[in-house]
Length: 493
Image 1 (spheres, helix red, strand yellow):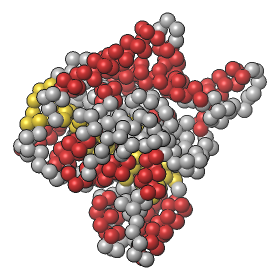
Image 2: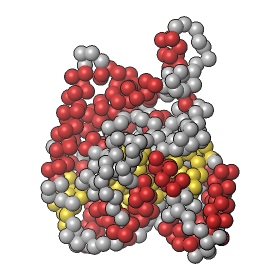
Image 3: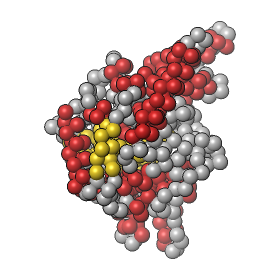
């Protein structure tokens, strides 16, 4: 039964000694055993180590010693975030057998300092390149709300694990919507922090200037607690900012009276499903009933988002993934015939999946002599225009409200042969990464197929407090965040 509680409720039960941490962890492994064959959330499960730590924390509590803020809550960690001595493969054959000798800073802060318990590594699109978690060498994850549909990506395994009750907390990474997409499709909460708010040390790089590690949970309060612990300056990551971290949890219940929501007409236009549009607009009306105000804002450069994003992301990926050649990092091909160039090329051709190869080739082309100015430099200039659109909008409003994804979850295999259409699914999330802003996705309703719809709140720089506050108030009014998917197969409810 512990798999249906929110994290903050479980912490209270543990503090009151109504629940043992060992029982909590065991119940989640039982849930994993029951549901994992259906949805495939994990690439690796670390049961023995997790139960051992749970016993240590229970023993600490018995002797009246204090433990960390997360009180042994189970957390699932995306397979591109380093966990010491745990397989970290980025769902790629090239990193098969790699065990990092260190923790990512976020893992250090959550697990080592505040006593969360890592229960396993979650499935993802290979090297975070995808929007559906179908590009994994381990096979796709499946949406718990409909097993024939995708869970979103690239942090799909984290989304399915939360929705199915396999974990209480999860970590994802967001380069172009990879936390918010699975949050929307799986009916959970996901936050992409401001660029520089959370350390990227220990995150396997895909596109340095775009990506951030983000918290995922079943409710806004749990997401806020995770961010409080994760955020802050890190000497190991020069991109982190020495900006004060707010007490997000304590400020959730503040009134949103007078808060101004920007409603961008372009985010509700062509390509956005009618049911998604209507559900999001109804949620904006709910916020207006809480005395928030709305103002129309405009993004004249939204149409350039996808080409700009993918030019920059693929260019940075082609550079970052050069290290995976079988010698510096990765597993080398068994065929060692030919010179070094032949062996490296063969290794990368065999071990990288088709989507990763596609992005490396396109990125290398964009950075090549004669095309660098035409493509990459031009994309950086358009990125500035998109950022300026946001800065103009925030002169009129406190936060921007819009859909997270243009549709609800699509069917497995539906867009695999149409990469351009797959890329277009990120049109409402990518602008946030290009501008470096924070954004929150939370469920706001369901379509006629009983699939979750995501509501996105975009905040100003380092103003996660405002979007968490507004998101929490909406969540409490809608009161749908406790709904769970009726997984088919067996007696799973």
